[in-house]
Image 1 (cartoon, rainbow, N blue to C red):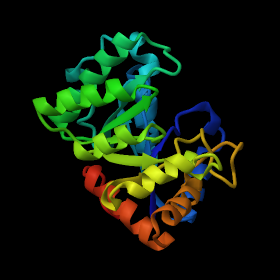
Image 2: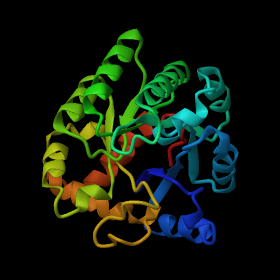
Image 3: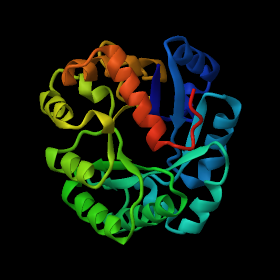
Image 4: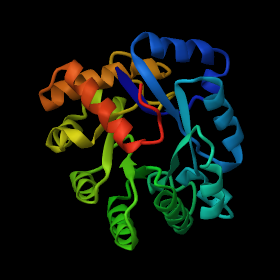
Length: 259
């Protein structure tokens, strides 16, 4: 059994065949999928997908690209929407200094709002971090000092320092298809160093399809390829890494019913 801890089934890429995409995932043993919200203003569409498919759950939150658009979203808003039984996470929120689609101050403000919601609800914060390692470490360390909250560094492609800081703070780390890319030796070295009980796998579909499907539209069924490479990276069998990452998922995403 596997879990795709992060995909975007509400994106237009899946509009014409969402039923088939979910069915293909189930056929290869992907028993749970979490479709991730990137704009609170579009949460209703994300929630509707989770309500439509029993194995699919969702989050509520604002991606850092959209932070400036949704600075009126408060912790109270997020907490209230997270009461829905299918909402199992907060985010994705974080810092993206590679694109800087929103001012960095807006991204940081939004991130802290989401952290407060994760702390209050006990739901895991799904963290997006790109080219922002130092600020992310500083904010997470400061905020964790105010009170613990569950979280994971999703689609991890940052440096070793952020990975180890996250582990020290009690976070989980999720790997996507990037782990399978030929030039990802450094990323695989980081993955090999992390404790197995903090590892998750994801697709971030429709983006970042893993080898051997690189260049194609990604989908939840492809998470098996990432899990295979993660197993090779940490010296485990595919069955072992499937069991470990699935157990880690249910421990972190504790609102999701176990299979």
